[in-house]
Length: 207
Length: 267
Image 1: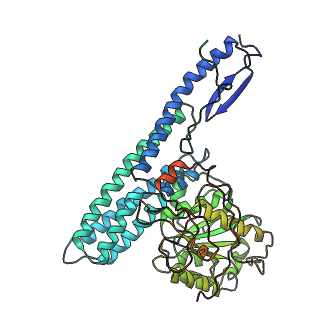
Image 2: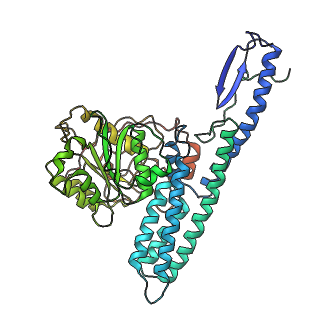
Protein backbone atom coordinates (compact mmCIF):
# COMPACT_ATOMS: atom_id res chain seq x y z
CA UNK A 1 0.00 0.00 0.00
CA UNK A 2 2.99 2.29 0.13
CA UNK A 3 2.95 4.52 -2.91
CA UNK A 4 5.98 6.30 -4.32
CA UNK A 5 4.42 9.60 -3.26
CA UNK A 6 4.04 8.58 0.34
CA UNK A 7 7.65 7.59 0.71
CA UNK A 8 8.74 11.01 -0.43
CA UNK A 9 11.58 11.79 1.94
CA UNK A 10 13.24 10.53 5.02
CA UNK A 11 15.19 12.70 7.33
CA UNK A 12 16.98 12.16 10.54
CA UNK A 13 16.69 15.10 12.84
CA UNK A 14 18.35 14.98 16.24
CA UNK A 15 18.80 11.23 15.97
CA UNK A 16 15.13 10.72 15.31
CA UNK A 17 13.78 9.49 12.05
CA UNK A 18 11.05 11.42 10.22
CA UNK A 19 9.24 10.47 7.06
CA UNK A 20 7.35 13.23 5.36
CA UNK A 21 5.80 14.07 2.03
CA UNK A 22 4.42 17.11 0.31
CA UNK A 23 0.87 15.91 0.09
CA UNK A 24 -1.45 14.84 2.86
CA UNK A 25 -1.25 11.24 1.84
CA UNK A 26 -2.72 9.10 4.59
CA UNK A 27 -0.02 6.50 4.24
CA UNK A 28 2.78 8.89 5.06
CA UNK A 29 0.87 10.04 8.10
CA UNK A 30 0.49 6.44 9.15
CA UNK A 31 4.19 5.80 8.70
CA UNK A 32 5.01 8.87 10.68
CA UNK A 33 2.75 7.82 13.46
CA UNK A 34 4.51 4.47 13.71
CA UNK A 35 7.90 6.06 13.68
CA UNK A 36 6.72 8.70 16.08
CA UNK A 37 5.70 5.99 18.54
CA UNK A 38 9.09 4.36 18.28
CA UNK A 39 10.82 7.68 18.41
CA UNK A 40 8.87 8.70 21.45
CA UNK A 41 10.35 5.89 23.51
CA UNK A 42 13.82 6.75 22.31
CA UNK A 43 13.17 10.45 22.77
CA UNK A 44 12.03 9.93 26.32
CA UNK A 45 15.08 7.89 27.14
CA UNK A 46 17.33 10.42 25.49
CA UNK A 47 15.77 13.24 27.46
CA UNK A 48 16.09 11.24 30.64
CA UNK A 49 19.73 10.58 29.87
CA UNK A 50 20.53 14.19 29.11
CA UNK A 51 18.72 15.48 32.16
CA UNK A 52 20.52 13.01 34.37
CA UNK A 53 23.90 13.82 32.89
CA UNK A 54 23.28 17.54 33.31
CA UNK A 55 22.28 16.99 36.93
CA UNK A 56 25.56 15.21 37.62
CA UNK A 57 27.42 18.31 36.49
CA UNK A 58 25.10 20.62 38.38
CA UNK A 59 25.60 18.68 41.58
CA UNK A 60 29.35 18.81 41.11
CA UNK A 61 29.97 15.12 40.62
CA UNK A 62 31.51 15.69 37.23
CA UNK A 63 33.51 18.42 35.58
CA UNK A 64 34.60 19.36 32.10
CA UNK A 65 37.14 16.58 31.89
CA UNK A 66 34.29 14.06 31.81
CA UNK A 67 32.97 15.92 28.79
CA UNK A 68 36.40 15.52 27.24
CA UNK A 69 36.31 11.78 27.88
CA UNK A 70 32.93 11.48 26.20
CA UNK A 71 34.39 13.10 23.12
CA UNK A 72 36.76 10.17 22.84
CA UNK A 73 33.91 7.70 22.61
CA UNK A 74 32.21 6.81 19.33
CA UNK A 75 30.15 4.02 17.74
CA UNK A 76 33.31 1.97 17.38
CA UNK A 77 34.20 2.36 21.05
CA UNK A 78 30.85 2.69 22.82
CA UNK A 79 32.21 1.48 26.14
CA UNK A 80 35.29 3.63 26.36
CA UNK A 81 34.09 5.93 29.12
CA UNK A 82 32.58 3.09 31.12
CA UNK A 83 35.82 1.14 30.92
CA UNK A 84 38.03 4.05 31.89
CA UNK A 85 35.91 4.95 34.90
CA UNK A 86 35.81 1.31 35.88
CA UNK A 87 39.61 1.27 35.99
CA UNK A 88 39.48 4.50 37.96
CA UNK A 89 37.17 2.96 40.55
CA UNK A 90 39.45 -0.07 40.85
CA UNK A 91 42.31 2.35 41.42
CA UNK A 92 40.31 4.14 44.12
CA UNK A 93 39.59 0.94 45.94
CA UNK A 94 43.20 -0.19 45.85
CA UNK A 95 44.65 3.15 46.92
CA UNK A 96 42.12 3.65 49.69
CA UNK A 97 42.94 0.22 51.09
CA UNK A 98 46.68 0.84 51.12
CA UNK A 99 46.32 4.32 52.60
CA UNK A 100 44.02 2.91 55.24
CA UNK A 101 46.72 0.44 56.23
CA UNK A 102 49.32 3.20 56.38
CA UNK A 103 47.08 5.27 58.65
CA UNK A 104 46.05 2.41 60.85
CA UNK A 105 48.43 2.72 63.79
CA UNK A 106 48.66 6.20 65.27
CA UNK A 107 52.22 5.72 66.44
CA UNK A 108 53.48 4.59 63.08
CA UNK A 109 51.87 6.43 60.20
CA UNK A 110 53.65 6.34 56.87
CA UNK A 111 52.69 9.81 55.64
CA UNK A 112 54.91 9.47 52.63
CA UNK A 113 52.94 6.52 51.45
CA UNK A 114 49.67 8.27 52.15
CA UNK A 115 50.87 11.33 50.26
CA UNK A 116 51.82 9.19 47.31
CA UNK A 117 48.39 7.55 47.36
CA UNK A 118 46.60 10.90 47.51
CA UNK A 119 48.72 12.21 44.66
CA UNK A 120 47.79 9.25 42.48
CA UNK A 121 44.14 9.50 43.39
CA UNK A 122 44.06 13.20 42.70
CA UNK A 123 45.67 12.63 39.34
CA UNK A 124 43.37 9.92 38.14
CA UNK A 125 40.21 11.59 39.47
CA UNK A 126 41.26 14.72 37.62
CA UNK A 127 41.82 12.73 34.44
CA UNK A 128 38.30 11.29 34.41
CA UNK A 129 36.47 14.38 35.62
CA UNK A 130 35.54 13.02 39.04
CA UNK A 131 35.24 16.45 40.56
CA UNK A 132 34.13 15.70 44.11
CA UNK A 133 36.71 12.96 44.52
CA UNK A 134 39.40 15.30 43.29
CA UNK A 135 38.35 18.06 45.66
CA UNK A 136 38.51 15.74 48.66
CA UNK A 137 42.03 14.81 47.55
CA UNK A 138 43.02 18.46 47.74
CA UNK A 139 41.96 18.63 51.40
CA UNK A 140 43.45 15.23 51.98
CA UNK A 141 46.84 16.38 50.74
CA UNK A 142 46.72 19.35 53.11
CA UNK A 143 46.12 17.04 56.07
CA UNK A 144 48.96 14.87 54.92
CA UNK A 145 51.34 17.80 54.57
CA UNK A 146 50.87 18.72 58.22
CA UNK A 147 50.81 15.09 59.29
CA UNK A 148 47.32 15.33 60.67
CA UNK A 149 46.28 11.72 61.11
CA UNK A 150 42.74 12.49 62.24
CA UNK A 151 42.22 14.78 59.29
CA UNK A 152 43.61 12.14 56.98
CA UNK A 153 41.25 9.54 58.33
CA UNK A 154 38.29 11.85 57.80
CA UNK A 155 39.39 12.57 54.25
CA UNK A 156 39.93 8.91 53.61
CA UNK A 157 36.39 8.18 54.69
CA UNK A 158 35.08 10.99 52.57
CA UNK A 159 36.97 9.94 49.47
CA UNK A 160 35.68 6.42 49.93
CA UNK A 161 32.13 7.75 50.15
CA UNK A 162 32.52 10.00 47.15
CA UNK A 163 33.95 7.45 44.78
CA UNK A 164 31.29 4.93 45.68
CA UNK A 165 28.57 7.54 45.21
CA UNK A 166 29.95 8.48 41.82
CA UNK A 167 30.19 4.84 40.86
CA UNK A 168 26.49 4.38 41.54
CA UNK A 169 25.56 7.54 39.66
CA UNK A 170 27.58 6.61 36.62
CA UNK A 171 26.20 3.09 36.66
CA UNK A 172 22.73 4.58 36.35
CA UNK A 173 23.94 6.80 33.53
CA UNK A 174 25.46 3.90 31.61
CA UNK A 175 22.28 1.88 32.10
CA UNK A 176 20.30 4.67 30.45
CA UNK A 177 22.76 4.62 27.59
CA UNK A 178 22.21 0.90 27.14
CA UNK A 179 18.46 1.35 27.11
CA UNK A 180 18.71 4.01 24.44
CA UNK A 181 20.84 1.79 22.25
CA UNK A 182 18.52 -1.15 22.78
CA UNK A 183 15.55 0.98 21.76
CA UNK A 184 17.37 1.77 18.54
CA UNK A 185 18.35 5.31 19.42
CA UNK A 186 21.58 7.28 19.36
CA UNK A 187 23.24 8.46 22.54
CA UNK A 188 23.10 12.24 22.75
CA UNK A 189 26.61 13.52 22.44
CA UNK A 190 25.97 17.07 23.29
CA UNK A 191 24.08 18.85 25.97
CA UNK A 192 20.47 19.53 25.05
CA UNK A 193 20.03 22.49 22.81
CA UNK A 194 16.37 23.22 22.71
CA UNK A 195 15.28 23.60 19.13
CA UNK A 196 11.80 23.62 17.79
CA UNK A 197 11.23 21.87 14.53
CA UNK A 198 9.91 24.15 11.80
CA UNK A 199 6.21 23.53 11.14
CA UNK A 200 6.85 22.82 7.48
CA UNK A 201 9.07 19.86 8.23
CA UNK A 202 7.19 18.56 11.19
CA UNK A 203 4.85 15.78 10.08
CA UNK A 204 1.15 16.28 10.38
CA UNK A 205 -0.10 13.81 12.96
CA UNK A 206 -3.57 15.14 13.41
CA UNK A 207 -5.21 13.62 10.37
CA UNK B 1 46.79 -3.29 21.50
CA UNK B 2 45.12 -3.09 18.12
CA UNK B 3 47.69 -2.30 15.50
CA UNK B 4 45.65 -0.47 12.94
CA UNK B 5 46.94 2.90 14.02
CA UNK B 6 43.60 4.59 13.61
CA UNK B 7 40.65 4.84 15.92
CA UNK B 8 40.36 1.45 17.49
CA UNK B 9 38.38 -0.26 20.14
CA UNK B 10 40.35 -0.92 23.28
CA UNK B 11 38.88 -3.87 25.06
CA UNK B 12 39.37 -4.13 28.78
CA UNK B 13 41.98 -6.86 28.31
CA UNK B 14 43.78 -4.64 25.88
CA UNK B 15 43.55 -1.79 28.30
CA UNK B 16 45.18 -3.90 30.96
CA UNK B 17 48.06 -4.77 28.70
CA UNK B 18 48.68 -1.19 27.68
CA UNK B 19 50.99 -0.67 30.59
CA UNK B 20 53.17 -3.64 29.98
CA UNK B 21 55.43 -1.98 27.52
CA UNK B 22 54.49 -2.94 24.00
CA UNK B 23 58.03 -4.09 23.36
CA UNK B 24 56.79 -6.65 20.90
CA UNK B 25 54.82 -4.24 18.74
CA UNK B 26 54.90 -4.99 15.03
CA UNK B 27 57.07 -3.03 12.58
CA UNK B 28 55.69 0.40 11.85
CA UNK B 29 54.56 2.03 8.70
CA UNK B 30 56.99 4.84 7.88
CA UNK B 31 54.24 7.37 7.31
CA UNK B 32 52.46 6.81 10.57
CA UNK B 33 53.25 9.04 13.46
CA UNK B 34 54.48 6.93 16.32
CA UNK B 35 54.26 8.26 19.83
CA UNK B 36 55.83 6.82 22.93
CA UNK B 37 53.75 7.70 25.97
CA UNK B 38 55.16 7.35 29.46
CA UNK B 39 52.98 7.53 32.57
CA UNK B 40 52.89 5.52 35.77
CA UNK B 41 49.12 5.94 36.09
CA UNK B 42 47.09 3.32 34.25
CA UNK B 43 44.07 5.58 33.90
CA UNK B 44 46.23 8.32 32.41
CA UNK B 45 47.91 5.90 30.04
CA UNK B 46 44.55 4.72 28.74
CA UNK B 47 43.35 8.27 28.25
CA UNK B 48 46.50 9.55 26.57
CA UNK B 49 46.63 6.55 24.32
CA UNK B 50 43.04 7.09 23.23
CA UNK B 51 43.66 10.80 22.72
CA UNK B 52 46.62 10.00 20.51
CA UNK B 53 44.88 7.26 18.56
CA UNK B 54 41.94 9.50 17.84
CA UNK B 55 44.39 11.89 16.23
CA UNK B 56 45.72 9.03 14.09
CA UNK B 57 48.90 8.30 15.93
CA UNK B 58 50.32 4.93 16.60
CA UNK B 59 50.98 4.64 20.31
CA UNK B 60 53.23 2.67 22.57
CA UNK B 61 52.46 3.31 26.22
CA UNK B 62 54.84 2.35 29.00
CA UNK B 63 54.60 2.78 32.73
CA UNK B 64 58.04 4.12 33.64
CA UNK B 65 61.09 5.98 32.44
CA UNK B 66 63.12 2.80 32.63
CA UNK B 67 60.71 0.97 30.37
CA UNK B 68 60.83 3.88 27.97
CA UNK B 69 64.62 3.73 27.79
CA UNK B 70 64.42 -0.01 27.40
CA UNK B 71 61.95 0.34 24.57
CA UNK B 72 64.08 2.91 22.82
CA UNK B 73 67.17 0.82 23.39
CA UNK B 74 68.98 3.70 24.99
CA UNK B 75 70.06 1.79 28.05
CA UNK B 76 71.86 -0.95 26.20
CA UNK B 77 74.08 -1.29 23.20
CA UNK B 78 72.05 -3.74 21.15
CA UNK B 79 69.76 -1.00 19.92
CA UNK B 80 71.00 -1.20 16.38
CA UNK B 81 69.13 -4.43 15.70
CA UNK B 82 65.81 -2.83 16.60
CA UNK B 83 66.61 0.54 15.12
CA UNK B 84 64.51 0.29 11.99
CA UNK B 85 61.49 -0.62 14.04
CA UNK B 86 61.87 2.22 16.42
CA UNK B 87 60.60 5.17 14.50
CA UNK B 88 59.54 7.35 17.33
CA UNK B 89 58.20 10.74 16.31
CA UNK B 90 57.25 12.05 19.69
CA UNK B 91 57.76 11.13 23.30
CA UNK B 92 55.19 12.34 25.76
CA UNK B 93 55.90 11.77 29.41
CA UNK B 94 54.47 12.49 32.81
CA UNK B 95 56.69 14.55 35.06
CA UNK B 96 56.00 13.01 38.46
CA UNK B 97 56.84 9.35 38.32
CA UNK B 98 58.40 7.11 40.93
CA UNK B 99 61.94 6.00 40.15
CA UNK B 100 62.81 8.17 37.18
CA UNK B 101 61.00 11.46 36.75
CA UNK B 102 59.96 12.79 33.38
CA UNK B 103 62.66 15.39 33.69
CA UNK B 104 65.33 12.74 34.19
CA UNK B 105 63.96 10.80 31.25
CA UNK B 106 64.07 13.95 29.16
CA UNK B 107 67.73 14.44 30.01
CA UNK B 108 68.61 10.89 29.09
CA UNK B 109 66.82 11.21 25.77
CA UNK B 110 68.62 14.43 24.98
CA UNK B 111 71.91 12.77 25.82
CA UNK B 112 71.23 9.99 23.34
CA UNK B 113 72.60 10.42 19.85
CA UNK B 114 69.82 8.42 18.26
CA UNK B 115 66.92 10.08 19.98
CA UNK B 116 67.96 13.58 20.95
CA UNK B 117 66.10 15.06 18.02
CA UNK B 118 62.84 13.41 18.91
CA UNK B 119 60.54 16.02 20.41
CA UNK B 120 59.72 15.39 24.04
CA UNK B 121 56.59 16.75 25.67
CA UNK B 122 56.17 16.82 29.43
CA UNK B 123 52.81 16.47 31.17
CA UNK B 124 52.19 17.51 34.71
CA UNK B 125 49.26 18.10 37.02
CA UNK B 126 51.13 20.93 38.68
CA UNK B 127 51.58 24.32 37.13
CA UNK B 128 54.99 25.16 38.56
CA UNK B 129 56.81 27.78 36.53
CA UNK B 130 60.28 26.73 37.64
CA UNK B 131 59.51 23.16 36.70
CA UNK B 132 58.25 24.20 33.29
CA UNK B 133 61.27 26.39 32.68
CA UNK B 134 63.64 23.64 33.67
CA UNK B 135 62.04 21.24 31.25
CA UNK B 136 61.98 23.70 28.39
CA UNK B 137 65.60 24.59 29.03
CA UNK B 138 66.54 20.95 28.96
CA UNK B 139 65.02 20.75 25.51
CA UNK B 140 61.40 19.77 26.00
CA UNK B 141 59.26 20.91 23.10
CA UNK B 142 56.15 21.56 25.08
CA UNK B 143 54.58 21.25 28.46
CA UNK B 144 51.01 20.09 28.89
CA UNK B 145 48.99 20.61 32.00
CA UNK B 146 46.95 17.64 33.13
CA UNK B 147 44.26 16.64 32.68
CA UNK B 148 45.16 16.46 29.03
CA UNK B 149 42.41 17.36 26.59
CA UNK B 150 41.79 16.56 22.96
CA UNK B 151 42.69 20.11 21.95
CA UNK B 152 46.14 19.72 23.53
CA UNK B 153 46.87 16.56 21.61
CA UNK B 154 45.50 17.95 18.36
CA UNK B 155 47.85 20.86 18.71
CA UNK B 156 50.81 18.54 19.12
CA UNK B 157 49.65 16.51 16.19
CA UNK B 158 49.52 19.54 13.93
CA UNK B 159 52.99 20.43 14.95
CA UNK B 160 54.28 16.96 14.13
CA UNK B 161 52.48 16.54 10.83
CA UNK B 162 54.92 18.81 9.06
CA UNK B 163 57.86 16.65 10.02
CA UNK B 164 56.64 13.14 9.32
CA UNK B 165 57.46 13.24 5.63
CA UNK B 166 61.09 14.06 6.26
CA UNK B 167 61.83 10.64 7.54
CA UNK B 168 65.43 9.97 8.38
CA UNK B 169 65.53 7.01 10.70
CA UNK B 170 64.88 8.33 14.13
CA UNK B 171 66.09 11.76 13.34
CA UNK B 172 63.02 13.70 12.52
CA UNK B 173 64.08 16.98 11.05
CA UNK B 174 62.51 19.91 12.72
CA UNK B 175 62.00 22.99 10.59
CA UNK B 176 64.95 25.21 11.39
CA UNK B 177 63.52 28.50 12.35
CA UNK B 178 60.06 27.61 13.46
CA UNK B 179 59.13 28.20 17.05
CA UNK B 180 58.00 25.16 19.00
CA UNK B 181 54.35 26.03 18.75
CA UNK B 182 52.23 27.14 15.91
CA UNK B 183 48.86 28.07 17.19
CA UNK B 184 46.23 27.69 14.55
CA UNK B 185 42.51 28.44 14.44
CA UNK B 186 40.80 25.82 16.43
CA UNK B 187 37.27 25.66 15.26
CA UNK B 188 36.74 21.95 15.28
CA UNK B 189 36.62 21.39 18.94
CA UNK B 190 34.88 22.81 21.87
CA UNK B 191 37.36 23.45 24.59
CA UNK B 192 38.27 27.05 24.96
CA UNK B 193 41.85 27.85 25.89
CA UNK B 194 42.53 27.80 29.56
CA UNK B 195 44.12 30.69 31.28
CA UNK B 196 46.83 30.52 33.87
CA UNK B 197 46.35 34.16 34.58
CA UNK B 198 44.21 34.43 37.63
CA UNK B 199 42.64 37.84 38.14
CA UNK B 200 45.28 38.80 40.64
CA UNK B 201 48.29 37.46 38.85
CA UNK B 202 51.18 39.79 39.11
CA UNK B 203 53.74 38.47 36.72
CA UNK B 204 52.10 39.31 33.44
CA UNK B 205 49.57 41.64 32.02
CA UNK B 206 46.05 40.35 32.45
CA UNK B 207 44.03 39.24 29.45
CA UNK B 208 41.44 41.68 28.13
CA UNK B 209 38.29 40.15 29.53
CA UNK B 210 35.97 37.27 30.24
CA UNK B 211 37.56 35.62 33.22
CA UNK B 212 34.70 34.14 35.16
CA UNK B 213 34.71 35.69 38.60
CA UNK B 214 34.74 32.54 40.62
CA UNK B 215 35.46 29.00 39.91
CA UNK B 216 33.19 26.56 41.63
CA UNK B 217 36.10 24.32 42.32
CA UNK B 218 39.46 24.77 43.89
CA UNK B 219 41.63 23.87 40.98
CA UNK B 220 40.78 25.44 37.66
CA UNK B 221 42.62 24.12 34.65
CA UNK B 222 44.94 26.71 33.15
CA UNK B 223 46.40 27.15 29.69
CA UNK B 224 49.36 25.12 28.77
CA UNK B 225 51.89 27.25 30.60
CA UNK B 226 53.94 28.13 27.55
CA UNK B 227 50.94 30.10 26.44
CA UNK B 228 51.38 32.51 29.30
CA UNK B 229 53.97 34.21 27.23
CA UNK B 230 51.94 34.64 24.12
CA UNK B 231 49.80 37.67 23.49
CA UNK B 232 46.80 38.16 25.71
CA UNK B 233 43.84 36.15 24.65
CA UNK B 234 40.18 35.95 25.31
CA UNK B 235 40.23 33.05 27.68
CA UNK B 236 37.19 32.12 29.69
CA UNK B 237 37.87 29.60 32.42
CA UNK B 238 36.26 26.47 31.25
CA UNK B 239 35.69 24.70 34.47
CA UNK B 240 32.51 26.57 35.25
CA UNK B 241 29.54 24.26 35.37
CA UNK B 242 27.56 26.87 33.48
CA UNK B 243 29.96 26.87 30.60
CA UNK B 244 29.73 23.14 30.36
CA UNK B 245 25.98 23.22 30.27
CA UNK B 246 25.37 26.03 27.88
CA UNK B 247 27.99 25.46 25.29
CA UNK B 248 27.59 22.88 22.64
CA UNK B 249 30.69 22.16 20.63
CA UNK B 250 29.54 24.21 17.69
CA UNK B 251 28.78 27.33 19.60
CA UNK B 252 32.14 28.03 21.20
CA UNK B 253 33.84 30.78 19.23
CA UNK B 254 36.99 29.70 17.54
CA UNK B 255 39.98 31.70 18.55
CA UNK B 256 42.76 32.74 16.34
CA UNK B 257 45.92 32.92 18.33
CA UNK B 258 49.10 34.46 17.20
CA UNK B 259 52.23 32.42 17.10
CA UNK B 260 53.75 31.81 20.44
CA UNK B 261 57.00 33.56 21.01
CA UNK B 262 59.44 32.85 23.75
CA UNK B 263 59.33 35.57 26.28
CA UNK B 264 62.74 37.16 26.61
CA UNK B 265 64.28 37.37 30.00
CA UNK B 266 62.53 34.33 31.31
CA UNK B 267 65.63 32.98 32.92
